[in-house]
Length: 153
Image (cartoon, rainbow, N blue to C red; front, side):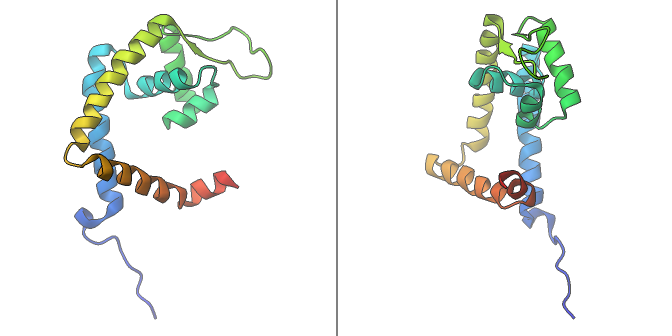
């Protein structure tokens, strides 16, 4: 009879340390985004729209790792502040393609610079090659998860 393996020492668990890193990054991003009056989810939305204008609520929610309902609130708040526009009615289907305004682009630039500074600090103990390797290794791990595999099929 085989004995099932447990997580063991948390400090040696890749998943636990990865969650600590994610929490540390999120907290540090929150600190630098707060003076810009942005949450991490709002910043993620702006960043996604800056790279791919016209994304739908569902696409933005997936990209920002929030629910569609949460993204709807994020979008409404950003729209009320004049940072993005959405048409009143969908040009086709139900999706409302979203675009950054010039004010939204300026806010995105300031936020992106602030977040990049956080990333530089967090990853400063690693060389550029080690950072690339970490990113590549994590991408391989993500692709190996059952959720990622089911999305690619």
